[in-house]
Image 1 (cartoon, rainbow, N blue to C red):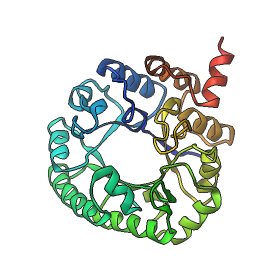
Image 2 (cartoon, one colour; image 1 turned 90 degrees about the vertical axis):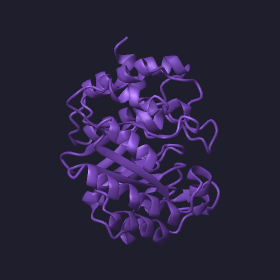
Image 3 (cartoon, rainbow, N blue to C red; image 1 turned 120 degrees about the vertical axis):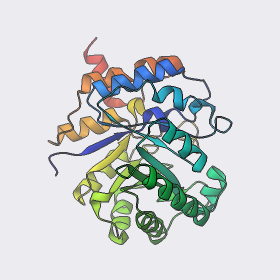
Image 4 (cartoon, rainbow, N blue to C red; image 1 turned 180 degrees about the vertical axis):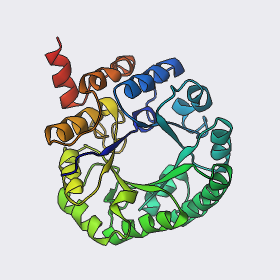
Length: 297
């Protein structure tokens, strides 16, 4: 296994975006600061989406102004208007979002895959002009299964990944949106991907308890970048009552126990999401987080 991996923390954006109870901007800023203090070097902080569609992230500009220095922060931008707002705030790392399923893109962003790729081509052109040294990633959701269209052919996912890479993104994050995949499917997708492992991150959900097993398979295949959400924030909106995002605490514990350095303080990480979880009336979903907190009592 590798001696070092990248962990991209997505809790402040992906973890909170579907929460109906508003999280105050100041609390979000403290959450981000604590994640950074725990050693997380890459954090997706927010999305410059319309407040009408995602009220929880309507404070993107206000939050961005409160982010601490010394960490690589990124923001999701759904369209050119969102990019314009992000650039005004000084954002130099962005993410765009599509899927391997037309049914999902229509439901989620009201576009087909082809339409989304056309929009993202425009976004990236403007972004590269405004930020020549900027960094961009492209998300491909429903990489294995769609809640509307069922199982996705690996070739279909690989095709979208390849299209995003051709648009010039620096990295593609491949998402198991409903947490359905098993390691065998990760290997099958890997075998048809035409993108170097160094250009790929994996975004696993733990809805059915297979996320860490999928990470292990991806590492064995040569991948070194993984998304995760502190405290398991995010859930899975297509599987009511089920866990969703892979918890950063579980990922870090697995990696460190396997002899893979993360540079993250597990005790600080375990405490980083507590105030947000209390505000939302939630208990930690992360087994590693619960175990660490119990050991400190």
